[in-house]
Length: 102
Image (cartoon, rainbow, N blue to C red):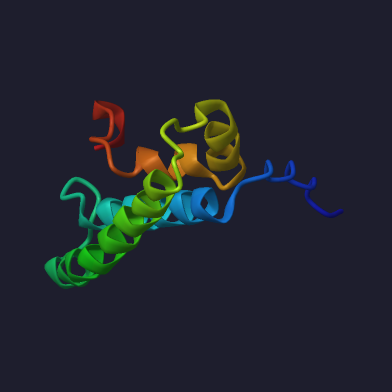
């Protein structure tokens, strides 16, 4: 049996899509750097090196939005997009794990 279809992504502008994609890439790298979860210094180092480029991409997406006059972030829409893209689990890797997981 096939797994259920995920809900569709909400309609996003190209800049909003870039914002979400870049944000999740930064989050994934921060999760790999997190000293409470990483397995070794080499993989954390590689993630830290890649973080600079991903943060630049995130900044550029926000710059485009701002230059177009998009002064507000549509939290509800972007929250739905993050949930569809597994954002809750991915952002959880950045936090300190609860004591029972240690």
